[in-house]
Length: 354
Image (cartoon, rainbow, N blue to C red; front, side):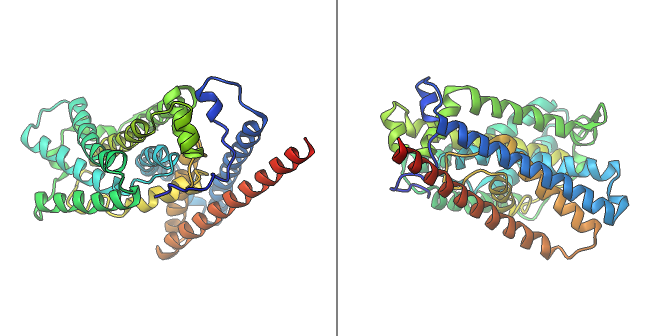
């Protein structure tokens, strides 16, 4: 998946930073355009909230805001992990199944060990995600299986294993200690604890991608894998780390899902991977790799989250949510293509004049 033989249409704004050089003007142009996409997303978000608020004033209450934050917290975490993978021209379709098996596993641990500390439960979810991410990493980086095929396979394998293990049973909220449930029900200064946990993870991941060599290498691989390899980047190792990161975040999100919803079974988080891909693409993460930010991906998740609740408040058929998601994906990809062409033309004109 996504290993194109032709040169990527976007200019590669990040390769020089791998070697520690100065960012060229072309990189500054793309960065400015990326920032404008995030600004546009923010404006769309504000207009969505304002428009729904005008149509249904009851939409603008604290409970709805809290629901949006709680729902988007888990989606935004998964979208951030997906972003790291998409930056390298890959995709991870197994995140929904990883969330499901992780949520059930942590719930089962609480049934067996009712007094297990909250941190141990979260670490267990993260560890299960790491194992799932490791399987994907080996298939893609070592086995050279295209990521679309590999993660589509593990999506069914993990879900099948979950169904075989659960065998029609479920974990109920009554099995969980109050301290664990408070991860979702608790608030700090009026902000849900779950949203704050997500914010810390997202901020850390954003700093990693922007400031650390490893993070910049993800961009370099997506912009031009051959050039990244020539620049000394260990492409296989970096791809492996990306899938491990995505898996770990999905496992962690599964543990949080259990705290959020309380009741989990074999179908938990089924189909959520499509929502995650949609949030990343709408959030200006280029599906062809090399371009995107955690902030943009989070704004994409927020936009989809607000649309979801707005449609319920406006009493619109749930079908339209999927239709709108599809339309937004098409619009985002079309915008990326037009942006890439305009930047490429501008670069060619500058080169011709030079």
